[in-house]
Image (cartoon, rainbow, N blue to C red; front, side):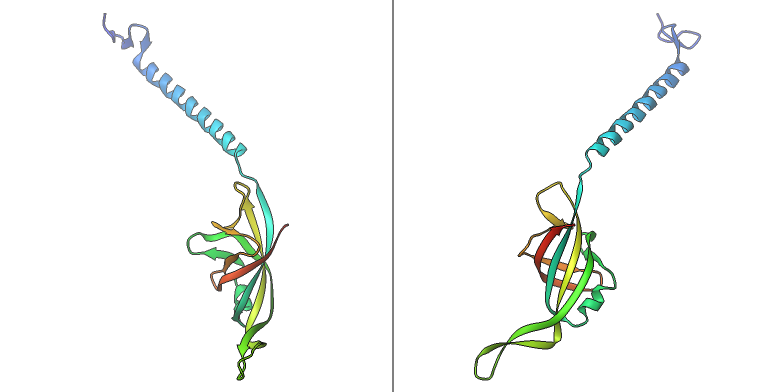
Length: 165
């Protein structure tokens, strides 16, 4: 018994061309079904997002720092690019610094060239872990974070408060 007969049928039952078309339709239907099931499962596994407002103090920065921050309010880290955080408000006060007097005493004095800048940062944090993160860096009250945009940089900013929006 021949596998393909003189009419081009496999085992005398189905035409070779028809078999190729049938297999193509089956693979196409399977691919479409797989894509639909995959998209549905991805939609169900989306991580919820919670919004926080962090109050951060940038101590003893140049008096142009607040103005420079206002040029672009998005937080930017070199390793992550633009992050899930943006600045929503900026306030500045004269910086109080500790200086030593001629007789050796330490006193607090206002520095005319420096400011303390208070920044409120809105963070859109995915709820896939227990930390509140800006980019890949955790933020917590009492901890230090970097406030950085493409125009301004304050490496050791103190987190004063975090609240849900």
